[in-house]
Length: 420
Ligand code: PGA
Ligand code: ZN
Image (tube, rainbow, N blue to C red; front, top):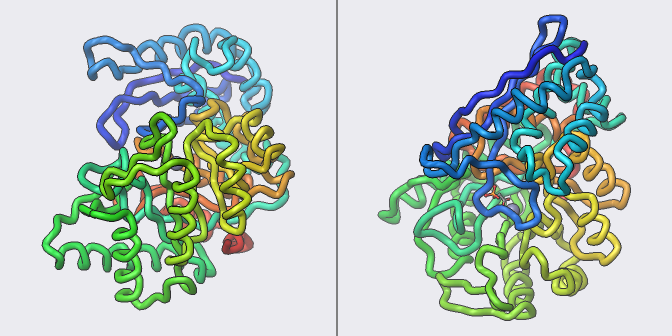
């Protein structure tokens, strides 16, 4: 199964911005397709996504990335075995030649890396997660527990909370389908709750409702009301998680919570998160502090290490940054986003490093998504603990939930990863 040709095209993501989709064709006539997502609250240390910077699409076109795929990348990969993912990805990394994939573009590279893996899975006649498990030499496939982002703020919503994500974790669910049911019922209950208070029930980028708060915890109060109304017990059936995405409101040593008109120094920010965790059944905090505040992360992990403390912008799926965090004991869990690092192999390497050190792994979408469901397969194939793939609305989010239910149906021996 050798790579024979590669085509790429510009498609739209869920925000209506252009992104790249690639098709890798094999010499046996079989092909694989993958599309690349994009972030809004991106970390400074992520691999670089190549954008045209020209008039079309306000500079966001990806035609240069497409030319790179159909030119240099195809020339380099033609004849390479698609089922040797390590070789495919190493060739891509070497061809690019930069530390952050800025020459060819991480978007161009990831589209090909994933499409090649898809083509190999198709040629083998196995579901994609099975192929990923084989690449990762993973014997322990499982279904991830979802963290469902039902209330959106920060850069993913206008006129909403400072903190970016308010998520529910259906901890009492025994199956993925049951987790979806709990999430969807609470989502509908939230809609009634918000509608009956006279507010509009619009959703943000990840399909969660927006809500005009005066305090960030208003969101968690709303979530508690909706959970109870839907017939579930906060803290027993459902726990909460937040992604503060704190780098977005951190400037010159200060965390600026505009909705609350409060400016907090790092210790005060840790105290603020501690207060929230004492008041609500909160189990997980992502990016509670800024992306380069390593020492403050260590302090937070000392104080709040009984919770899941997730590094997203801090770690950017990068094995070097993860190793540093492991050594320093800054955080205890990592968010995994393929396009932060740019190849499937490096992503799997990061997941394995995290697991080997007892860290939790959470596979994640981006706020700008497509109908591509590869992350559902990545989570199952690597046996990741959790998945973040948004709310229970917007087809680019539900596509992943639906795919996970299909996978559950296809292999009844897969179990839902343990609750937190
Ligand atoms: P992004 O947000 O995709 O806009 O970066 C997702 C997250 O911060 O987890
Ligand atoms: Zn995040």
